[in-house]
Length: 199
Image (tube, rainbow, N blue to C red; front, top):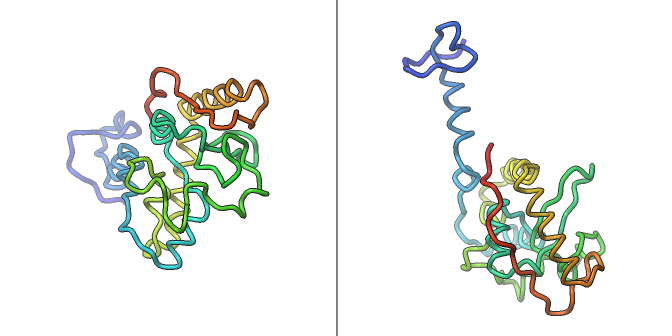
């Protein structure tokens, strides 16, 4: 039986029965209230082979990070990744040659379009994806949970709204051809951020 904690708060399930909230329930509630950035803090920069290999595959932004990146003018360097079951999409840094398009396997061999001469163009800009900042050789195996939580972030109304806005901008800038923005076209953001993430 979970440890009982003296607390004036009651869990919703126990409130009617007058039971105290448990440590497990408190930890779950605390975890739900923390942002993804708090749950997955940035790691120390590293240039080992393992960490450099992580940089080949574009990491994912949170919805809010992707909005800010679009606002900073990086929208034309994003691609749209579609879930295998086609239920949601994720805006991420594009593979080289895949900018403003749907993510296609044929471009994966080109690696992240922001990786130039072994260095990330986003490094130090404040627009690095959370997944890129978090993954590190010392956190081997922990990136899967980070990725799963980022998936959940994109499966929200805010995520769908941002994907829709990006698609509309790509279509508008590309004269109606999906995934083919004009050369050098900038995807300027519409007014207002997406709704805040709510777990």
